[in-house]
Image (cartoon, helix red, strand yellow):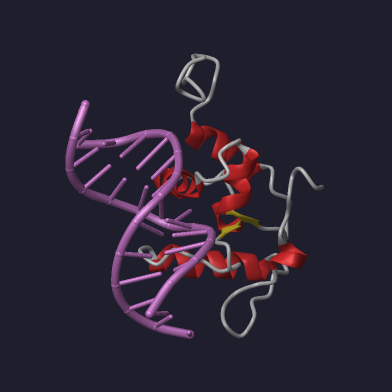
Length: 115
DNA sequence: GGTTTGACCATAA
DNA sequence: CTTATGGCCAAAC
């Protein structure tokens, strides 16, 4: 068996692309965590790679604002403008943040495998 | 090949 | 609660 879990074949999509594909499937008013996305792609510990994929993402079409961290809060510390926009978008989708700035993942967290 | 980055997660103090 | 450290992963340089 090959040492690499996956080889970027021609037909296979790279991780960033798979991340965008999954995030694009997130329904309105729902959010997913980096860990959930990574786990869905078969890399339960690649939460960082998920963040890197979204970092490269600049075009819409992908509701990147529906991706939050494990605490149910926006992690965009290095991109304050985007972070502020993200909370605004989520709030428009009916997602309300708690007093500490984090939402209830039990309620808004969406799992493609569970759903 | 190695090094750096980056929107994470977990644990410890 | 905050701060520090290590681990983890993939892509870009």
